[in-house]
Figure 1 (cartoon, one colour):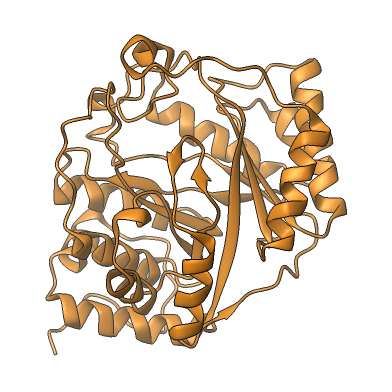
Figure 2 (cartoon, helix red, strand yellow):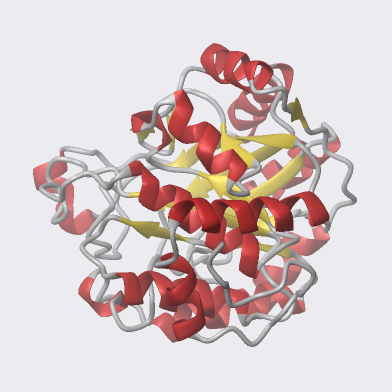
Amino acid sequence: MTNMTTQTADIRYNWTAAEVQALLEAPLLDLVYQAQGVHRQHQDNSIQLASLLSVKTGGCPEDCAYCPQSAHHAKSTGLAKETTMDVDAVLAKAQMAKDAGASRFCMGAAWREVRDGEEFNSVLAMVRGVRAMGMEACVTLGMLKPHQAQQLADAGLTAYNHNLDTGPDYYNKIISTRTYQDRLDTLQHVREAGVTLCCGGIIGMGEGIADRAGLIATLACMTPHPESVPINALVAVKGTPLAEQPPIDPLELVRMCAVARITMPKARVRLSAGRAALSREAQALCFMAGANSIFYGEKLLTTANNDAADDQAMIKSLGLTISETSCSANAA
């Protein structure tokens, strides 16, 4: 076996980008072998099913190059701006997700940042309602101020999703309307409120291996690590600036899952956007490499997702189990 850069027993918070890049460039089978050892030491063989709903779609003032919900791309994507969903309608969707086996319900709003007022109050009511069902509640709402993070915590929020998207050196090639530090500041506000972090990124946007390493190193140097790390492959949507990006090799997604697992042993590594393009065998390799959560249901915000019955059959065929939520209001 190739000599790797870490011991399976270590949990570290001082990873360098060079160390992470060495892992990303290691022979694939060696890398997966190491990641599986770390996974078995710190995780069980369960898969968490998380369901994701867009509670306010379109019209976002950010210019993220991958996102069909950006107002900058609306003319070419044809995605109309919608109003925030009614609380009862959202909770009905959450109940359906729970009945289908999901233990985490995630709600996304296409906002640049949270603004105090009626819409935010509605989101707080959604969080309280989801938690009352016994499910984990996660939201992604853009940038937050400290008092807003605290309000979400008081409502019982389990996790706040705010992805870094890519490494710090590539970030300004994808987004110009907010900075990397803006994202880090929001993550800090969430941490200080006692809510767990759901924070990952996207591959396949034209970045290099060094950029992927920079993303993982940034996450793996957080103390504590994010409790949830979504690994996304770009879904190239017609009308967005990245519409012509070629699909990634699925083995690159396996590598990202493996390196996330090695560097952040206790995190939920979430196999997220782009999974619909993966074969069952490619998904199985991602699970072997340390992924232990999938988004479950017909849509990921505005893009298609895998069939729920197929997911259930795949999990059963691999001999994995579906995890139950067992958290308090602010646990991962």
